[in-house]
Image 1 (spheres, rainbow, N blue to C red):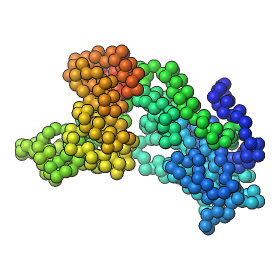
Image 2: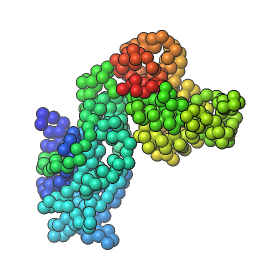
Image 3: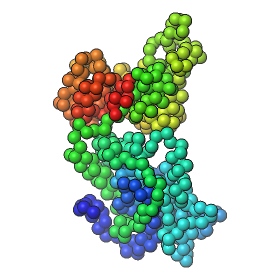
Length: 478
């Protein structure tokens, strides 16, 4: 392994020899896919002699030595296992819990699984190699299971490959106890996305790669906890020096779905955008006369007989009667988010009607998709209101004039992205000078671009290193 001063520093910390010996004796044995690009680098351990709260499991849990109906243990060892990389985002922390009885025998084992944790027994028995609990690590994602069959069942539900199509989309992961210490910005997310897209792979589904923890890798959890922010920030500094803007993997955003191929703002359009390689779909949101959240762009729709239906003065039932083409009809926001979740698409929601804000926030939370959404608008006051209702929502401010100060505008309403809408120009990329981009970057903001279908303009935008480009034909963005 090349010299890694930060890692060497972590491995060299002084610690209690007895606890270190105990943690090493029972450290789990991990089985990886033969194509797995990322292996653990450090393991923070905590020894329990009595029931107590986990110090490192972010969702919270009590480690219980002798729960009812289970073999009693006198000791539990929590292993917080660190990777620099998950295939979806920068850094990974997964957990294994090993329970040992008074005779020194392993009697129970548990491990983390996508925000939850599970017993590691199969058919009532643990897989052990001596004192080491054997667990399998999900390819790229690293969740633990007692058998690879768990992974196959989970992947069978996915329409796109988590390790290839979706590599890097999560950007920088920030657990709640690192929020003030890790520097997450749109640029940081671009750098991470770019790095991980280069490591995209398809699993072999052969789990013959055996990982045994080295003694030096084991450190007390508080030491690992203190080290993690420095490690993550050092990676971001390194990537900023190594990856030029022209190589950034920008977000591919299907404008109103895939408008060049399917009726806009329809479920078929969103599915087509996913098929064509979009990371997100842009959709427009208004409120119908009966208070429903209608995904539609124009102020009015025209039915097959030529009658005009103003969106905000028509009921959702009336709007749904209109054939938008190919048998598609106006979807609700909830229906659109459901398709986005099925297709593993982010949603870029442009608010066309300020009356939707409260219900929109509720719908995003109910769908559990809020971390995969951006909310944008030409109305800065609507974005300010959205942030007041839901600070966790990421927002983007749209504007048409080249004379707007993008930084001042975004900062005034707490937006994360600026979105110039300059598609009307013959060469809009010429308006985006490197100085303009750099000023936005220095303010910690990102840049999302108008819908663009001209290959030469897309190429120019790519060279500038923007964060996202919208397009009616998202295949042009690949």
